[in-house]
Length: 120
Image 1 (cartoon, rainbow, N blue to C red):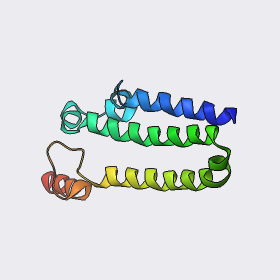
Image 2 (image 1 turned 90 degrees about the horizontal axis):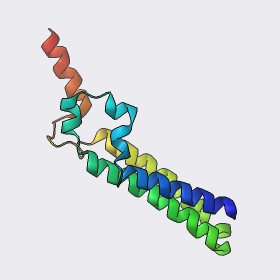
Image 3 (image 1 turned 90 degrees about the vertical axis):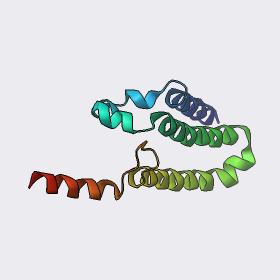
Image 4 (image 1 turned 120 degrees about the horizontal axis):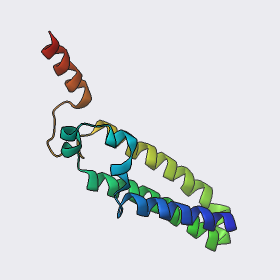
């Protein structure tokens, strides 16, 4: 039971790191982007999304720590649902233009075609 409290507290810290403290701006992948690309991404909205995913995981762990019924009957199914949700959220983030300030048509595939055409 103590491990559920530990993982709950750990994921709360991760969620707080991402949203109020803007942890997404400190990630290596974001730092390696050019200034123009960084300015085109809505980093605050993306940080809120990542923080919400981890906050939901923290809630699952804390409920598991406080309720034997939840831990024995619901925890594993809710954790599996969280994995499915977080994977689908990651796919949505990578394929959509939702977090871009200037929406581009066609996404990544369209960008690759434009670079090929400009190089010829």
